[in-house]
Image (cartoon, rainbow, N blue to C red; front, side, top):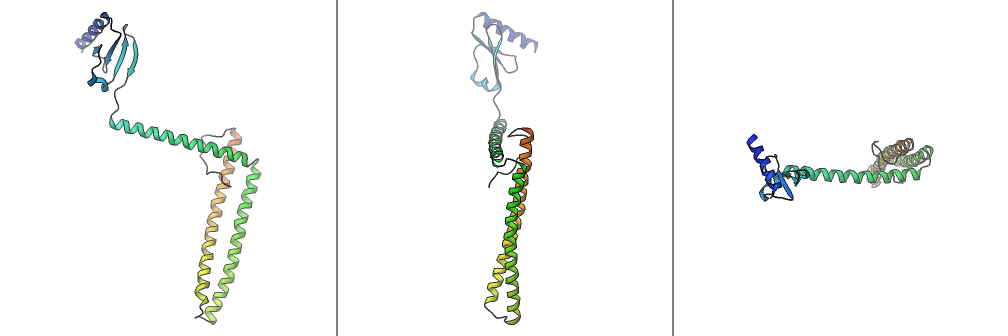
Length: 202
């Protein structure tokens, strides 16, 4: 090791003595040369000026695994930037749409009330259809109307199920908007570490 270091130092002094503009120190620091061997470039090297001061350092070339990992990191950063930009746009839209918490609560209650009204209409229709169906099944079991009524009843039941599902989704969405709105007003920010919410769509 000491012999190699002395040889390297000697090579460096000779190179500098010859007035070389740059000297390359190969990775590991044991070999100095004024000409960079092409087959050693991937190993990494340091460029020194004629006084032995470091000008720049080129790290070893990445392995295929390291290149793949770096590619993933770049894609992840880009995706995060895209998500951050989308969140900022949603935050801006949320603050423009609602001037107060009360406005969000009013909009939520109005939306949920509308869905409840639709469901009430469907339930009423289902009651009427069910009564008619029961009557026919007692008085005229062979009536051609029975399959039609059963189909209508099934369709109404599905509509009620979907309305309940939509009501839950809308309630969660408005409540998330309300929580986000409070966070933005409290912090004075349009982005932050708080979990992101669904887009504001009205």
